[in-house]
Image (tube, rainbow, N blue to C red; front, top):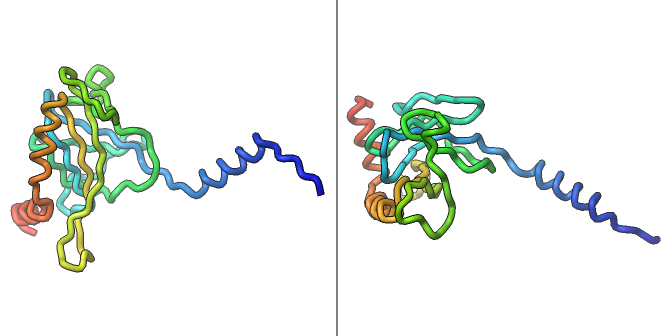
Length: 167
């Protein structure tokens, strides 16, 4: 038998297969207080967390002044576009540019990060807390915020919050 390989058809079939295997995550929009710089920590699946909010099928996360949001949203697995960040409200003029560049600007405020994590509540790792971290600021501000975020005790943050809520 003689087979001719049609590259465009083969590419189309491969992309279709891979697209079907992947799962799409929901788009995310983060709204931070005016002039906020520092870390953003979103802790998922919290009964006493902020209510779920959407705008045009995108999740809205309204970050408080301390940078830590307990959210009722579950984790957001799958592929999606880069998140969007805004000061005060969702308006083009308030958008904070997001970058994944390794070299951060020294004099321009940007948003970066997106590392997901898991904090275990027990020695077997069966009960845990899932979260995601981002940073907003200039290079120096982000470096400082990174150091602060590294010292956070996620489990203690959640437990303290639940105690304050009377849970």
